[in-house]
View 1 (cartoon, protein in one colour):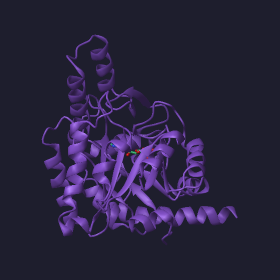
View 2: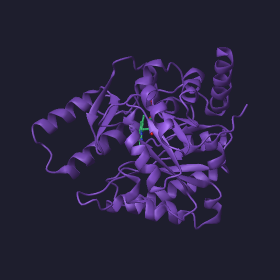
View 3: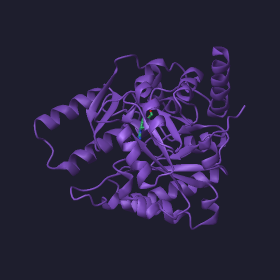
View 4: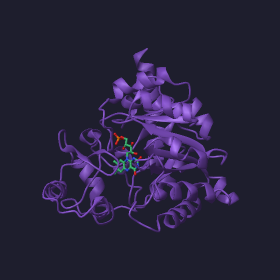
Length: 334
Ligand SMILES: Cc1cc2nc3c(=O)[nH]c(=O)nc-3n(C[C@H](O)[C@H](O)[C@H](O)COP(=O)(O)O)c2cc1C
């Protein structure tokens, strides 16, 4: 039971359901599974301290193409230096995504780039004219309007309760959704706290053209790239088990772990030589959680929605199923 919206038409997918970027460790199988299920899967960018990152990302893109014939996205968090100039690694990653489309087999599948973190204008000149649909993630209406005037094709509006990088000015999904959908003319994908038919129906009631989820998809049987202990930690998390800490691009929401307490202590005692050293430490602890299942020492981004997630999903059933449930919920309200 599909639902055609401005967003599904824009990116050429069956269901208005997006699995968003889940960095920094490799995330290829899950992205392909979501695309195969008729949603939009997103391949994540490798850690930013990986100097060879653009080449590694190209490998992920090629691998995803062996797993799906459907459209998929790549996520690149972007940043600028104090003078507003795009950070070299942001530009390199975005360029790698654009260049990958020179291969016609890749171009058939790699349809979308999702930028996040900084302003899309810093990389817009690289993306414009590439044929990629450009989504940009924001946490406020002002940023949404700016992204629209910068020329992006659709907005991902993510509420403060979302997992991973969240926003310095806290606006939650139920406030953000209608604010952004009223303000912009381009399609809006709503994220933050979505997990089932009821929450998908709520997003559509708030004016969204699609929904995006991160935490819900982490707790799935279809992510062999990550250690299964991570998905188990999502299922076991309860209300109040999350905390917002200072991450690479701003605040980030994660499970409250001893690893985060260790980070706070190291920062307080001035143990890091410079910003690069902190970034590298954080990247390593994210990767040790995702790849090796280090739940205590690691950093585990997850949203508040983890408190309502009690099982692992099979993506092939979940994506069409959640849309069917949402339609039933909406019909039942009438
Ligand atoms: C484990 C994890 C890693 C994430 N990594 C990224 C990332 O690399 N880039 C990004 O833009 N957002 C990242 N996010 C945020 C998600 O893309 C998405 O916006 C968020 O999970 C949506 O809220 P939800 O967790 O309530 O579904 C991450 C989220 C999680 C849970």
